[in-house]
Image (cartoon, rainbow, N blue to C red; front, side):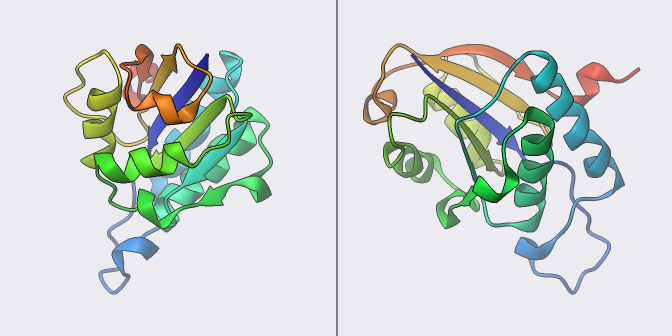
Length: 165
């Protein structure tokens, strides 16, 4: 069995219009939501054997925060340019490169591609993955190359507003 987490970056800042899209940081809400969601994963005993992130600052910073919360070494986070504004084929390409010893992978990316991919690969129809939303999908295979030919079982879809009063 293989497990895939699809995680949309936390809320980003638009305060500095001079920054490129890739350089936009997390805003105040994003800096609160990422550790919250990481702690929820930790409390569920969820951890990754591989984390791959879009190189965009907001995605990579979200990955680092969630990695810290779940006990993954931040220095081992991989960046892949294909996850920046990825479409379904980009996600497939990233997954098919994964070594099968990595039985649980977390991918950090952006909308609309991450929602489209979750709907393509999972069995739950999701209208929109909000910022810092997390989708967990399990596959009945031990080879990442087979994952895109299968529909996985969506085990959960969670996002920050579910855990706030």
